[in-house]
Length: 315
Ligand SMILES: NC(=O)c1ccc[n+]([C@@H]2O[C@H](COP(=O)([O-])OP(=O)(O)OC[C@H]3O[C@@H](n4cnc5c(N)ncnc54)[C@H](OP(=O)(O)O)[C@@H]3O)[C@@H](O)[C@H]2O)c1
View 1 (cartoon, rainbow, N blue to C red):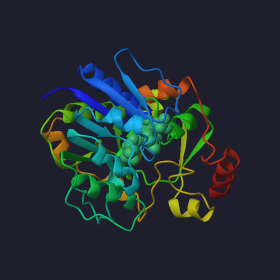
View 2 (cartoon, rainbow, N blue to C red):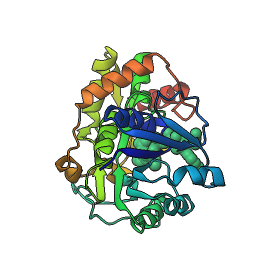
View 3 (spheres, helix red, strand yellow):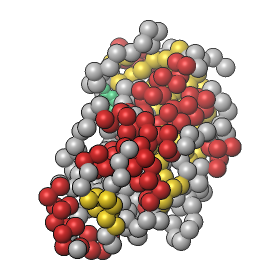
């Protein structure tokens, strides 16, 4: 098999790491994106500037040359998939999400055969999966769990890094044994780069190992070289203050929260196909180092004044 790979995207969080992993494997890489991010690509990378939803003739012509693999990192709704039929390729890898799964009960893990929720927030992803599976190519749908690592713009892990670095008492509304499942973006990228030229087809979950909230915070404390005063306040008490799980306090998912299955994913098929996971400690260490150079405070994070008020009332 040849090594001509087209990345749809390639300049975002996962895409930049994916580009690097593809180049390391010696692939000849072309990117298609709208050119909205200030990114310099290395020598030998071809960049086609275009919007997948509004393909003009010049862009279409650039896509016609034929590819060994397309890795699609930015399909969110059915209209995004019309591009699929315009690109002759042997393999088509679609980045989907574990948020397509419906709720699971008890200690169950979601496998590729678990029921999906076609009326949930990820229904657009399910439309993309359905349309991808009809393409005249070998198709691999990659359902990603929560991805983090250096450059992660989501603020999910860096919230806890920043809170530890700031000191004072840190409000923790999660149960200590709440599952937290994150995968390092570099492990995702390495897996995708190999899968681009492998024969793996169908659907595969790609997710990290499951840790607990308590373990995760211990790693953050180690990486930040801090000894934070963690104040574990019962979730229902914090909810009564109107604090929003996941958005204002990242990674916190009270029982019954629709994202909770996201943290209980079985990635056995990917592991058997070669997915390797670095220790979570290494990821937390690298994210902390990266965050230290930036210290962005996300506007959605719980403001310090409200956090103090909840803690004061919790006693
Ligand atoms: N991050 C996670 O935890 C996570 C979890 C599950 C699934 N995923 C999936 O992983 C994929 C990648 O996520 P990400 O966080 O890396 O995304 P991202 O940072 O938003 O990057 C999106 C990329 O796609 C390009 N793009 C967006 N719209 C485009 C359009 N209309 N035409 C051409 N190019 C377009 C962007 O470049 P331009 O803006 O310059 O066009 C950029 O290169 C997504 O499909 C996401 O749903 C991510």
